[in-house]
Length: 270
Image (cartoon, rainbow, N blue to C red):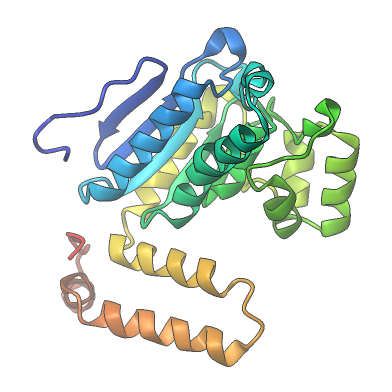
């Protein structure tokens, strides 16, 4: 399924639009502050599986409809209907699987956080490669208020994104923090006035176009693979393998030739 044939999946509460090689995914459940209903979770899984197979898509932007909420988390009403086995399957095969796919997707995923970003919503953002946020956005892992903990990777990824002690404080008190605090902690890359958020995200995408898509894929793979590898030699081995693979691609040859000819490269992702 590619941009060229103009075929795209249709979802009831998930916007799926492709524009200039970028897939814009918009969680559309405004009455519930863009909470992840069972159907939306299934649609997100399907959407990211489709994106993963579509080489015409070079980047993904994940956001929520409106300006009030990026995503308020999972639909809590689902939990009461599940027994222990059902909860295990639901946590592992839905939210956790969505997060795993985002984290390992071979193209960059940008979270455009336009409002509140709580619980499962923050867990989604934690899996993205870059987070741009509105100055009015707020963040928090609030599951402790339900007597549970973040089950889609929040207790694992937040301490890797910020100080472990600060992450413990946030999680153990179900604290909400502002966009400015999130920026200071390194939880988000940049914050902007709400009316500028999309245009700044589009500007980021334009800057990324100057870099070969296979190079971005290689960088993401190396960073994710080696982030927690203790041996520097082992990590450097992964990096060398990636650059040897990239050096043989047409994009690498085009990049070198464009530099010699003093022109902008035309990368094709091969």
